Image (cartoon, rainbow, N blue to C red; front, side, top):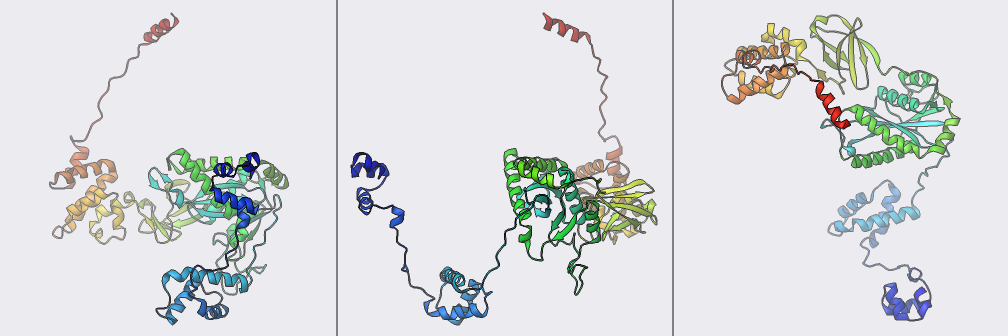
Length: 489
């Protein structure tokens, strides 16, 4: 129409508009836009295969409104064999959707809430599997504890290994000390870290069937926060942090693409990367964050300990049990009580203030971490117990040790094969495991007889690589004077 008003030539106006001359003339005659000329379609392109069964379908839906379209389709197929084909399911789904919109029951409406500045914070855990982050080449399976202020959408994220009370304490503390302020409420979902599992007839003073855990309440008291939870099954009440989870992971994905690598040298390096991404996200929320900070009180308490303490007695197996998992300790401590510090990601055991064990914390139940250095001395003295030793598989520190044992042990050798292997393991514990592993690899590659004496000869004998002697370097400082003189000229 614009081109036609310039020169009045229908053909030229049609060419410039990119349409056929006859089409252009049709719009000119109608004097209306193409979008306004479309008439709603009131006919079917094919026969409705469910027309004669509509009342039957509606009766099923009225009797059992929860039925899905696929279930209804299977019922119809069973009642009327050879009447329907799988490709007609989509037609039935559209019919049922239209019926529910016209005659179905009312649905629950999500009531949008107006957030007040500084009133509450929401915390939730989210999986990071889709980010495929690795630590030194190994896949790092972990979660992010995300803390959000709903009014401003200020957030902070902490790398965690589980949805435990230790993880909540760690994530909450990092967020509050980064913010420097404290809101009135702290809201979580019904995770077992914050609330007890429901029990029949059990309610707290406020009528909740899932009362808060004592340890969680202690954290809330320390920071003067009022705890509250969503209703059971109502995750939309934590909608702000749920939405923040997805937005944060999209930001991290883009940052990782820009970085060009998903591998990090340590967990701390990955946490620092997450912190930098979150800081950039928070930078664009300045005005509302300032309003929120002004409405909150200043954080005026110190940090809580990042661990919980408990005592553990060393058994006659030279192990302690912590959270239903077994850890070995030096056998000289058998019968003594150790003070155990249980962090979110690691465990430390002390005896009279001296650190005796520091290792990664085990996850789950009935796991075990047995260090052969703690056990080997007893096994060498009592080799007959090795064949049926409960922790026998933990006595193979690497694959080459297992291969060596298989080469040494035969049905004919019996105890003699165990003795020979235990001597090799004893050598690894008293020297360097890497040297013994290298010697085993050489002997296995040769294919000759494998004995503890041959391994010892390689590790301690003349065939052991020696460090070359290097003369001390003599530095002539006059060369620097010559260089400076040349530069000056």
